Length: 278
Image 1 (spheres, rainbow, N blue to C red):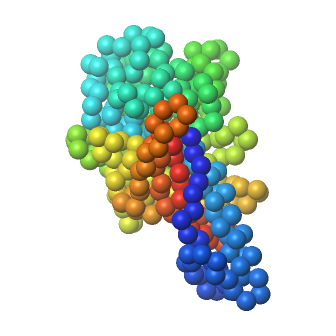
Image 2 (cartoon, helix red, strand yellow):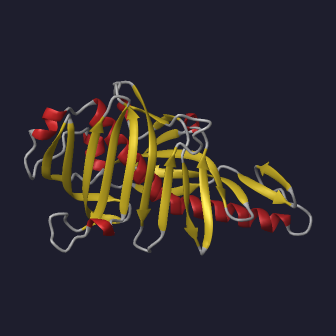
Image 3 (cartoon, one colour):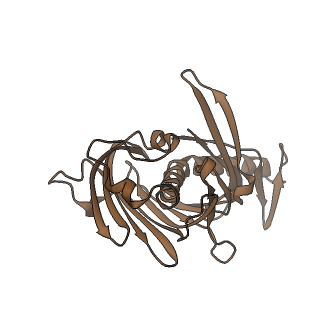
């Protein structure tokens, strides 16, 4: 899943006043320059955050399908080298990986090793995920590593991605509310933290519909990381504001998800949009 950024509007800060603008409106004393800088920083932050957010959404979709679509018998029937029993869209987003090993943990829980995963900025990685059915929530935890988990030299403690998510245990086949956290380290050693929802006091999670599980229908998420040595963050608007566009690339049809939100640094704030292509 590729990511880039678009900016429908910007936020201009003039002293203590924060103004949302459309077009070139400035403040006395270099406000127009400040506006351009704020817009550029917001764009840059959204672009850096994009791959980590996309990876978190892919894991969210996998958690939803593991809960609502694939039962324990489906997992345990898999053999090494087979494809995962998930939707073709999700399988493609993960790079069409293969099963490495399936283990029965008892009480409906399974542990699976998957190889050949494409996620974040890795072309080939391994993933181990564990499902934990419970009375209240269905748990999903995954760890991502460069190389194969079966290799002796691969140390699980040196993972570049760790995900812990949960959703309601009844696993409805319509809308699922997901909450949790994903922490990624990219090839530049930058740490990305994605949290669903952005504010637990205002939302119970991010909702996903099985018919289009990459596209959340409600809820928010947040991202934190460093850009150019500065701590920065992103908070999305409610997913009701997400839009999906289709376009033709040189090879095939591409869908683009735009998720508006707010990016911020230590002394600035600006509005922009995450752009996720798949």
